[in-house]
Image (cartoon, rainbow, N blue to C red; front, side, top):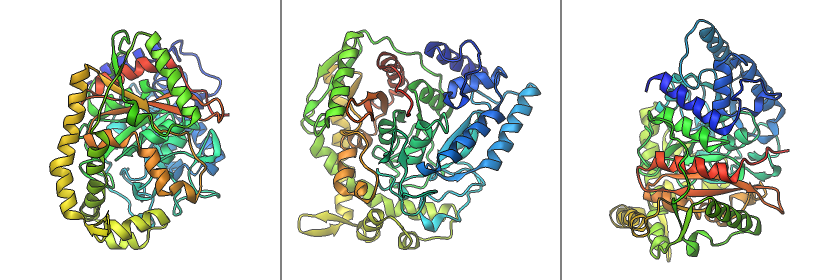
Length: 501
């Protein structure tokens, strides 16, 4: 798309949000969102170099968050100065001109290490950008650095024993540094919430862009599977993995999506008459008090704003998801990692990567299941291949149909539910326990396996904990732009999440 169309859309978002529309310089430029920063840089109210320097200083002052694997101070500042020089010469690269963003450390950025948060790949430096990163750079974005993550993306806690810039271990939540920032895109979530970056990229296999966004007060998007080119990303599962944009607002996520996918930024959808489905028997299980109260209040606000909340039934959801989830991810992980290591000439084998894994939970999964190609059975470990074939050939198609039938039967545009059943838990080794993992992927995993788009939206802070709660909408396959438009309208009703103190 021509840059001018993007710029018009970005300007529209700024005006809708009522931010920076006057062109005035804010007192603290690190509080700027993606579209706001792009507008002020374009208008020369601020420079890319001063914003980048302010964000680097903020990153350095918050090293205890463990948000970064690589903070590219020199490279980011050089790119920012070049962006300012280009603008002075009348050369506008695109709708993200001069805006610093962060990229998860499993997504390739040329010239920067791409370790996927694991020791064996610390020395791997890609020669080319991943297509998703390239789209952002072509639109003028600056890469501030590579963000921390759960090792090899195999978890939701961000307790990574291999990558931390300060003790204690684990990516920390800016709202409470004793708590985790979710995962596996932990560092991007923490950096965005801490105002170290206005936005960036995570990846999502079963919730990894949405979970950290939810527990850190931001917006995270999992597009329809296949919407983005997934090359240049260290994989778990080629049939489940996708890059996911993350920011503080849905409007900014929509802008990042438009840049990557090549479409237009949608207008917020009128909520009057929008039908949103609620399946309480599954998605509202295991809620803590803060999550339950925030979500129920949010649903009431949306109903008062004109949305129609429809109670739905998905009786086969849990059974079909169980049949399609772990068998696919754990089986594809070996072949996909093997192909990735060879394609990008990392010089490592899967077995060598596994031997050096630092995080105990990931090491157990790789050594016990991924490498030997096994899955847990009723009486011990069993061969994964036939279970995988059943998952791909039977359970997943049935799950996809179950979602499509539900949308059609009830005439709903999206399902709506808590992104995570609990607010962020205490960070530490216990955060990587299997029970915690299963709890936090409870609501994000089914849509991931069905390949539908999912969007986590900030819903507010819990009254007891003061921690963020996210509300998610999942739409039919291919409804990405419409889902983002509905999300932008929901965001306006629910209001922004206050910044961490």
